[in-house]
Length: 630
Ligand code: BES
Ligand code: ZN
Image (cartoon, rainbow, N blue to C red; front, side, top):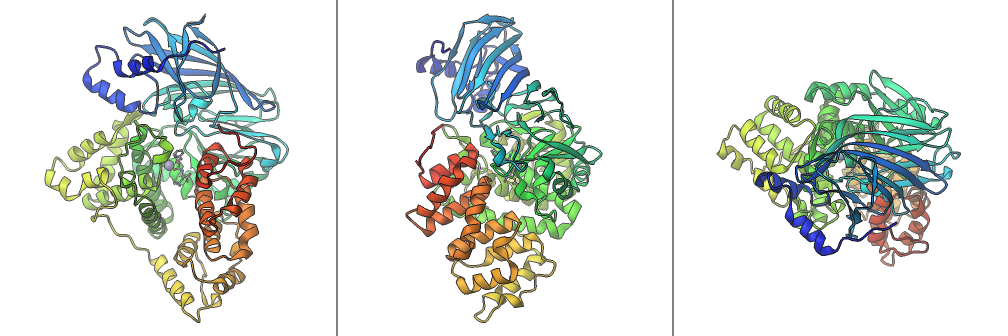
């Protein structure tokens, strides 16, 4: 049922009239900026608590839901506005009485549509009955064949950055937080999990109840349903996975409790009680997603030797940077990710030693240099503080936020000393807990509390250049790694005319040393040397996804066709965008007709989540058969 559609003019008026009269200018400015990717007007009416009642229908691939929202209103509130995108809204209630006084706004590219509901300032609760559609980009419905067990279907969500609105009407700005509870009904024999208190066993009734009593932004709403089991790995840490994967998962993430305790010793108590990781099927589009209490993770980090678990440290670190202290807008994304990379490497240093962390940092620096090159024509996208107004926030989410953010914080740390910097960050997390911040507030805090208002020092550290300028300022700290230097020597020998793979001494090499080695190999090393390497080290067959992805890039650049089948198999099985993008890019560069890339993609695309397929559609300019544009 579609109600009156709000005209564009009304929408513009709505945006420009701002919040209630009594709010001061500062609050209004804050709110304006916080709402660049949301239709919500929280100063008029905002959600404080959500009670989501939903059933998961695998046959029709929809969620049937009723969402109840406890709201807080201003004295002159006339409406509450939600973000929606491709949802089918059936009924709306205000304080339990059905109302027809609601409107769906015009479609805005990637933002979706506003849902406005007329209320009075006395309203306490609104409820929305709705069904999701094929256009629910957050959701990925997997058939049994796409799971490890091959028997049961699977569903997972990915809400960050602005996809929560495709499965729940919500005030979808990272600046708006609320608590939630949910009752989710799933087919008998499956387990449902959320970013909340979770079950540890399958309930044969198929009905699960969840509570998240700490306020979170909507991009952290998450749900997964499948044939899942739980295994504890520590006092308040554990893993969920399909039964056939649980043992390998528990082994790989054995050190999680140590990581959690290390994190607490650096930046204060973990605020969310339990910390678990859910191992998803390989189509998960990210490495990890920091859903509170339950990180979602790709199975491509199961290397068998715990060598890719920095990712767990990263998602765990978000329990402070991101989930506790949240970027208020996606322009401030570096506050979430740069801090988290910094914290991740501190945890890894504490648990596995400085040499280990140095390798991660150097690989990060290589990623950063590559990203800076790739963004040479759009220098604004290399600022830490972004301007994403009118753009899909996904566009701004490059390695800049992660690695330039990291090197900025690391440069600050080295200048003031670790002790002082830690004290400052501890205060940052405790002062802003369960709140949101923007870059400018952080810089004020930094200037006043870390630099004690020393203007000269602020200038000397080039802080504004770091945050509001392009590229990498020249005071960026340098890092080195003795373990990588050993690799460099071997690369040199191997690249020499008479260099042979047999002479390379890889005893005790870690995954990171391998990555460094592979990254140093030129694009024209030639088939003979590629084959020699492969014969000695079986790189085409490696089970380590990071090493495989790097090897595949060299293989494509060098037209090493013996890796072709493995590349194709990988692209069809794995949906992690970070791997897919460079490999498809290399394939497209190696063959300008894009014939091979497109042929593989046509086969692989049904396995990908929309986050990945949207990016690769664009990369390959794909308009193939059966392509449904969402
Ligand atoms: N929060 C991000 C993932 C994300 C970012 C989802 C932007 C949607 C929009 C997560 O914490 C992350 O950074 N994941 C990385 C892991 C890594 C840097 C260790 C990933 O998935 O590669
Ligand atoms: Zn992250």
